[in-house]
Image (cartoon, rainbow, N blue to C red; front, side):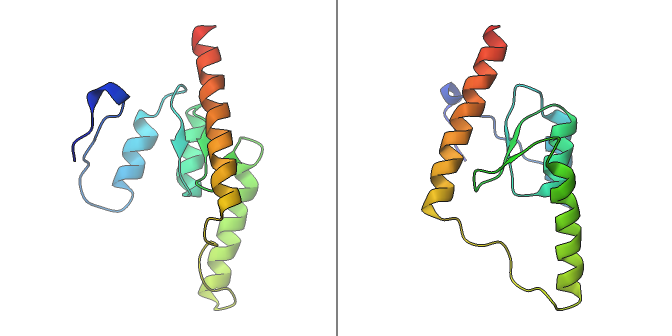
Length: 117
């Protein structure tokens, strides 16, 4: 995969295995990075490292909200195992995309303000 060097993106290839990519991200993320993920445990790990985290639907994960998100994930997992709950997350809607772009811009601008002091 060719990535133009001028856009500030680095391609990293990790080994195979469960959570190997998540482990790499959680170990290398910094406060001035922004994690974009729907993976709630990964979001929690990134928050622990001080990085802002944004879901693909535009929902920001914060220190205040991550506990509820983890508990809801655990409950939904148990309900799926019992056959009470089915399916996955709802499809991303245009309003989600709009919220995502707006929130991403806010996080980028906040990071620039912190960096430029």
